Amino acid sequence: MRYLLIPLLCLLPFFAHAGEATDMAADPVLEKRMIGLAEKLRCLVCQNESLASSHSGLAEDLRREVREQMQKGLSDQEIIDYLVSRYGDFVLFDPPVKKATLVLWYGPFALLLMGIGVLVHQLRKRKNLIVETELSAEDAQRAAELLNETADQSNQPKDSQA
Amino acid sequence: MARFILPFVIFMIVSVFLFVGLGLNPHEVPSPLVGKPAPAFSLPQLHEPDKQFSLQDMKGKVWLLNVWASWCTACEHEHPLFMELSRQNLVPLYGMDYKDKPEDGMAWLQKHGNPYTLVVSDAEGRVGIDYGVYGVPETYLIDKQGVIQYKHIGVVTELDLRENILPLVKELQAK
Image 1 (cartoon, one colour):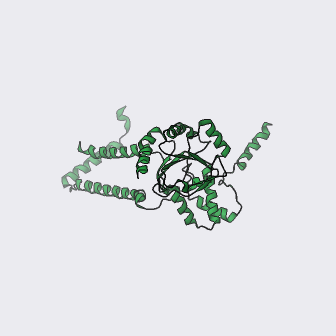
Image 2 (cartoon, rainbow over the protein chains, first blue to last red):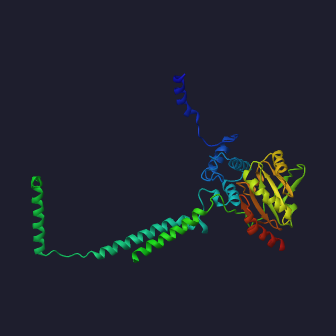
């Protein structure tokens, strides 16, 4: 019994088909167009799901509404306009650029520009702080001596500490 | 000291934004219908399905349209308030039984009491879509010209009624 259970369990994923929630597909072309449009629209009940993939009752009703309006011969844009007039821009996953959404669309770029500005300003300020000075011959000599000294020390065997 | 001022100011600004932003309810979507004429409809009455009720019947009146359903548990919370409102007789309250079997809706009203002047049945939720309903209960305040003046999403509390809805009702009735 147990040996039968394991292969059966392995078969389980094949039955767990997680496709779009479909109600009826009488006209496959229309259904495809409806699903295409519904993917761009937000389900207002489960807000991060699209209208195409939601199983909520309202989503089913809205898909029916979209389907019926398509059958009536309305264009995609007309249907979107209808839904926006009822539910607001919130139904769109892609909010339109207008006064209220300017910050949403261009805010990140403004912040990026501000960041670049601050960065450039800081880098310039730091550059001015570093004063390049020529090394005098005497200093160069001392530096070379110090460098040679440390090089000699590192070559020495480590038994001095023991 | 001066070098801490700028980060502190930025911190305060971010705090204010987060405080306000996280306090908002993402389920309260502002309705584009406020300030627009209420979508026309004609629906069968819940108790007398042969009779229709339409938006035109309410011309010249300030009224509340409450969208509810027997399956809506939140509706039970606002229900006592509406019972009280109907006793006070300040504003006519009409109900829309949304996506509900009429017999279930009637049984619910029998059990909890009926605060509505009249109830219409939107069994398929078509008028609901026209009104942008997405979460029951929802309540609309419609003026004499048939324009939606206010929309309340979710349970109406006593505070909402006292502070927002009733003052607006009074103002609109005076017009």
